[in-house]
Figure (cartoon, rainbow, N blue to C red):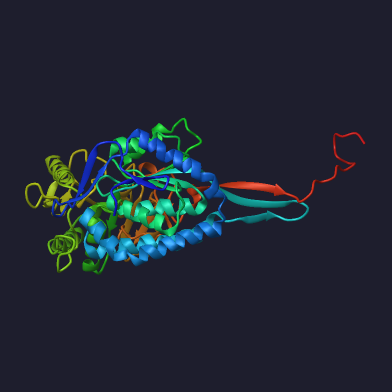
Amino acid sequence: MTSKILIQGEWRDGKGAEFSSFDPSTGETMFTAISATKADVTDAVSAARNAFEKWALTPLAQRIAIMERYRDLIKRDAEELARLISKETGKPFWETKTEAATVSGKVDISIRAYDERTGVKETLTGATTGMLRHKPHGVMAVLGPYNFPAHLANGHIVPALIAGNTVVFKPSELAPGPGAFIVERMVEAGVPAGVVNLVHGARETGEALTNALVDGVLFTGGAKTGLAIHKMFADRLDVILALELGGNNPLIWWDTEDVDAAALAVVQSAFLTSGQRCTCARRLILPEGATGDKALDALTALTDRLIIDQPFADPQPFMGPVISPKVAEGLERAFDQLVEREGEAIRNLSIREEGSAFVTPGIVDVTRADSVPDEEHFGPLLKVWRVGNFDEAIARANATSFGLSAGILSDDKAKWEKFLTLSRAGIVNWNRQTTGASGAAPFGGVGASGNHKPSAYYAADYCAYPVASMEGESLLSMADDQVGVTP
């Protein structure tokens, strides 16, 4: 795996400052590179611009064939990719193997989505033929996150390339290795020079890329950064933005006979990937009284049994560390602040040892807390609200500016149907964890969770724009009865 940047098919060092990423479970240096400067980013965008015309004119079948070779290379090297993701993110090996599988699986899904969502369709027959086609935008800037450093960036890049766009990709500086890995396999698969370009770096590199003359920005990350990008392009109607920005996601637990199964769904919702999924449940809503007490007892008992360890430990852990000691400190501070606001600590979120990125899952009852902020704590921190009735539960679930995912655990189908209708989120699950999402469906949300440009299956929509045509092989003769024309 190279630590260089890729511009116009040439691997080279950046011209900026050196940076490194670290294995959060050990502190070992994993990746060292020279950041791309503004000049490097300008070169990368120019390379993508120069490559666009030829790539857009390449027949779709040829573009797909290259992506299928890329798919096969990822399958060949899936275990290597999974191990790399585990070392860069600290995620358990069992989990990163599923991420590696989704990287290759995204190709077939994207081919199907492009045909279904944006394929060529005839809309009118007769003397005039009506056609609907879709065309690529041009140069796409892709900014990847650290929690799924291969899968989520890949989910933007593959649909963009199939549609005929070219790409400049900046992986997260916290986990850049998997991004470099997938780009190397794209080059090996035969993606032409300039069609995919890779730049490494932190905030300055990302700002240089979003300030460059690109035709689209595809971003997965925090709401504050997404809002800044949205404002940046307020006067650029020519730039397509697809922003996936996380959520303060609610999970209602109401009337379940199998309390232990429901507790497992809560744990999978709140603590999977150490709480570092944008669909993780951040708010658990329970009934007041004995029923809610019983649910909470089952949840805490299961939480106490979770194995927290290094990615390759045997037995395999449920969760590993968060991405860095700095993030761990921020989560511990956020938990303490909720307790200071009169929240009741049910299970403390605490750092395992000083300087560590390992934290224990935190559960805090904030029902009587003062002014709980509506924000996403990106880690294993679960806030609990107790309410008097189901209508209050729905109101509490919707009491957020975010709208990515939501869920309900209930044996009562009528409650599910009411919640489905009244909840405001792009992903709404019944008796399944909030972290369950399919690549064969749209993935995204409303409000502060995005800009109504869902990814996954619907990435095809923002990677190409519709062009309607009225066509005839010959001109129509002027008719004698044309209104407004003298004979």
